[in-house]
Length: 192
Image (tube, rainbow, N blue to C red; front, side):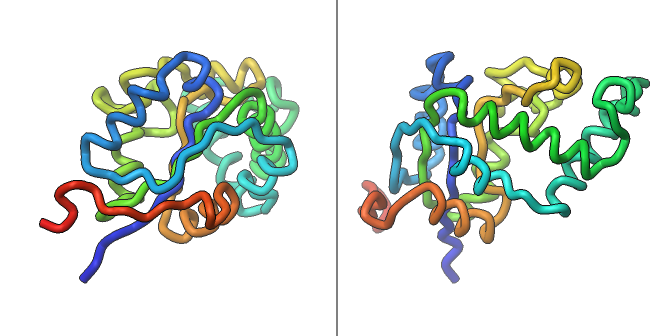
């Protein structure tokens, strides 16, 4: 059985602007993941709108997580965000995420390796940096809380994005890379 997978990794504008690209890339290389494509780009709102899908299921899921955070801290989402409707909140967070991802250059990579999707997700850590485990990229390099960014009405600066599933990786690969930008080669030791 072959467990080889490809996954998309984006170093977001905060990671680029903080000069963490080299440190982040080297972590993936050290565990044996292969970079098949890599580029720096500054994406527009249309492109980012395809990445953060405008779908009710997505909006609801993001809105529910946001409401859970408000509840955890004893705050009223209706007071701060003007609504308690998870779908409306999800749309608001999507807008913030789109503004953030298009606010500066992004380093986009296509990585491959055995169980690459799961390995990369484990390495980057929890979406919310304040709960990301030490030793993960977000746990080591980020300090933002989702609640703080929600109260500031902006996206959480969490440095990095990685495909959440093999299916999402296929969609994101087509969105972020042309086939002629992807290179297959053998790393030293791959034949062993």
